[in-house]
Length: 69
Image (cartoon, rainbow, N blue to C red):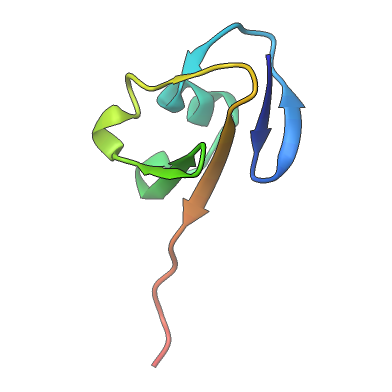
């Protein structure tokens, strides 16, 4: 399937996988700290295990950083 991850089209040799499987597949460090935008909508963390990613989907991994003064 072809999906867009963080603005770049990628081909993954699976027909479908969940968000959590995609995070694992992409070897994302600290997946518990990542927010996910799925096809333009923020995805609730509770849905990471069940939301299927399929051909043509757009996924953004968002990392929020603390800091400043």
